[in-house]
Length: 67
Image (cartoon, rainbow, N blue to C red):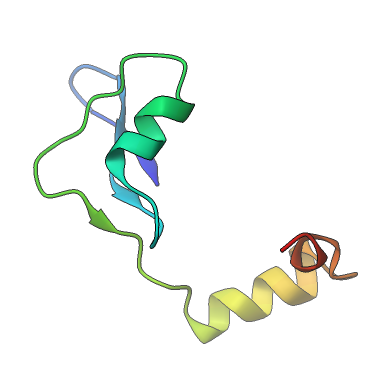
């Protein structure tokens, strides 16, 4: 997950998905990525978030089939 530093306006890393590392993200990013101290794992989605993804974003299950 990313956000933007409000002062520098540079994109920065907030968290990494479980099973991935900061190094994985840096290797897949085409620019120097600021990484603040304390970057942890991205929390799993809530039940409500999953419901929105399944009912509104990926109604036909296309993205789920890519696993």
